Image: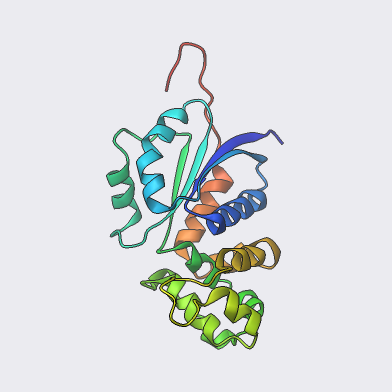
Length: 208
């Protein structure tokens, strides 16, 4: 199996772990080089056109959340000022990457020490998957889980102090993307894209 070197760009630590897990499970020989991001949605939008240009030499995989955009094609059209190069993979989680975790109901319920009946059936349809996940964590039987994921009372924070680390442990350990994709069309599309991608390498004197 030939190696496919790629650079990544992500919104945060959790998104990076999700993308790394998907690349590993794709079994295509992806080899991660530089990881850009951890600066949120705005950072990705400001830099996407530079990465699109750089993708002529090395593939870039960018993972962002749809958030309040109407749909993924609209977001992509809004971000890119030039035609998307073949070697740029721009994937959009609907509406947030947390929806992809919520799709694996049984394993996430076990990780959060919560009842599986609390898990949503259609996570892609949630207006705010992160808020849904935190609300579920509030009912956790584990005080440690609650303290990691849920903002402290009176805090203005939107998530608990160890939110990314707690969910990253889940992604690295027990998350099953195949199971999660049964309930998330946006994850299904991303898994398929990563499984089929074949880079085009520029030839001397020939830009594509």
